[in-house]
Image 1 (cartoon, rainbow, N blue to C red):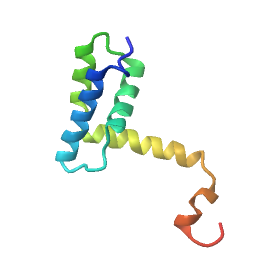
Image 2 (image 1 turned 90 degrees about the vertical axis):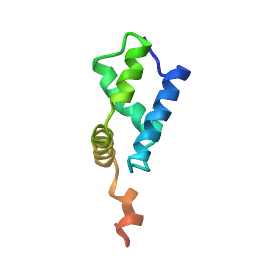
Image 3 (image 1 turned 45 degrees about the vertical axis):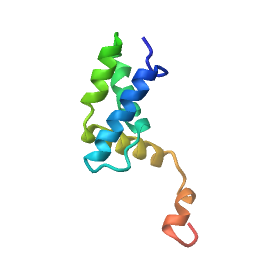
Image 4 (image 1 turned 90 degrees about the horizontal axis):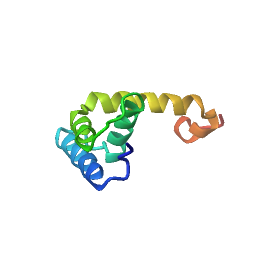
Length: 92
């Protein structure tokens, strides 16, 4: 069952992101937590609402960081060097 648009799941995502912010990860958003869960759910989708909420609250900061790093690497591989001209300076 797809819980991505469920208000209770959205609340759980927001609460988990807030809890991670309280642990010092101030840049983690509910979307980051949702992306982390979506990857897990691709292979093991929750069958019930309580399973989805349990999965959300079991997410660790390390899990989110791994997913975001993997996502950044994939995005970087598919980008052109000109996309980073402002970071590198000069003509690329």
